[in-house]
Amino acid sequence: MSDWVSSEEGDFASWVRELDARLHSLNHKRACVWQDETTGTWLWEIESFRGEGLIASGTACSRQQAMAIADAVVDAALRSQ
Image (tube, rainbow, N blue to C red):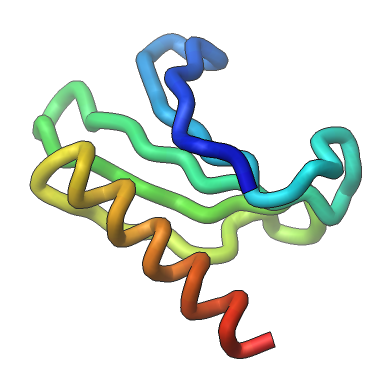
């Protein structure tokens, strides 16, 4: 699992944490955090390149809180496997 890094993939700044080393695999998963430009709310999601793509998502009051929530969701999922 990587650390959170700044990403300029889209039209807005986001932070990404790769959850496994298979970057080009359909099974690859990553966490993303970004700020909604309209509301200022921070959004987080865990995504995969398989199936529907979205595994989990939510909102937070700050970037740090969004990262912490996403990390907690990932940690809980790993413990349940």
